[in-house]
Amino acid sequence: MVTKTAAKKTTAKKAAKKVAAPSAPKSGLMAVIKTGGKQYVVQEGQILTVEKLPKAEEGKSVVFNEVLLIDDGKAAKVGTPLVSGAKVTAEVIENGRGSKITIQRFRAKSNYHRRAGHRQSYTKVRVTSIA
Image (cartoon, rainbow, N blue to C red; front, side, top):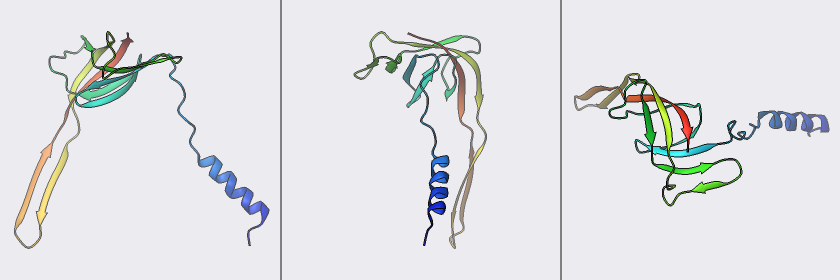
């Protein structure tokens, strides 16, 4: 038998575990861009790690023309599939390679084993403007 006080305690615990919904963007302007086969939600000033961008030098700026959505907090412009005339400008912070991932394959009783490693290249950028 559960008493009323025990029921109140479990309800309070459940309420405490709930995660608050994400707040609105601080700058009021956000966009969804597509690069490297992936989609990213970006805001001005955000630092983002994307797949390696060819010909991206540190300190230079990069323009992402594949913008899928722009939201200013009041109205959203959704592209079909891209928003015409929209672009996101970012400054390249660094080019690098991620940590090593080890791949192992093994088949029991057949003397089969393979080992390989992989390091994914990336480009770290800071979003400077959304237009």
